[in-house]
Length: 316
Ligand code: NAD
Ligand code: SER
Image 1: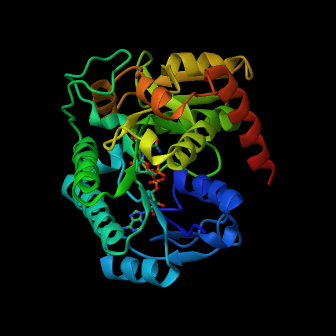
Image 2: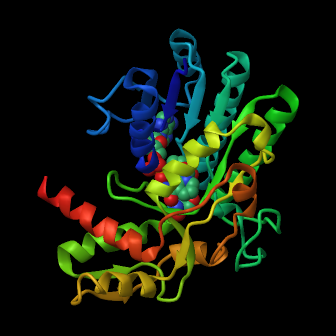
Image 3: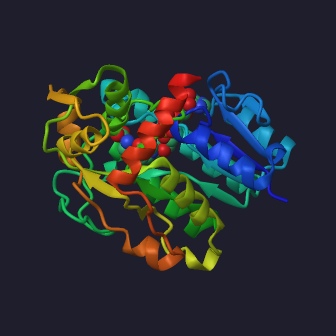
């Protein structure tokens, strides 16, 4: 029987991933943990432990006590927040990963999931349909920490045989829990403001294309990757993962089909430089070939789902 620990479970991905894992593996078999108080959707749906991932001893004791067999490490400082305090972001992102890699080896945890990001790519990377293996020279502290982390995952697989798996998520768009300080967060805020005020001021410029994905696809990809047979996983750094690509202008036009009076204006800030360093679109042939990945949501389908779901939240 699997016993799963999700670290950073109170965040944008963690809440939905924990709920999906609980539905699949049984609620008592998925322990949610975060440095914060439990998120409202997690509090009554299974075990919750408030802890700091930087406290290696506390995590190690929990893993031992609960006989944890799989860890999903989601705690991290994202791109925009990271640029405000680079050394702190580096410390959290790297130390959390090194702590968990070591605990997995020491306690014989059978599988580790740790996400990377499109932020590993930088200004020198080809922008369109960016390939898995290409020029990788990240410019943000977040991107540098993700690329270093990918190399450490590969190292622990090679040296200790740790079954570590990873995805380079695009910008993730969701409605159940708030995003945590990324450059792609505009594509969530825009839906919320469209419903609230029928207008939105975007912190990226009109034609800034970025790779994006609806959360349902991202959760499915994560679980499919983790459940794939070990021999199918040929990449022990991190797989490119592609959903869709659009600009602020295009997402606003998709919203206007549902809310005709919606308007958008543009006031790019420091996040523009981060977005400009990332690819416009990426390809994910290796994920498709190795474990059968295929995204289901495009911009139209996601827009309909986001607006419908956010209306439900407003009524609650
Ligand atoms: P988030 O900021 O929403 O959530 C991170 C969670 O980690 C938060 O709940 C936070 O309280 C927790 N946390 C922070 N420091 C902690 C600590 N010291 N101990 C324990 N918990 C701590 O982030 P997210 O969007 O859910 O991202 C999860 C992972 O996915 C991160 O590694 C992120 O880099 C990666 N990722 C996210 C996206 C995206 O668009 N959301 C894209 C690419 C990669
Ligand atoms: N969505 C994330 C960010 O913008 C990408 O990793 O930071």
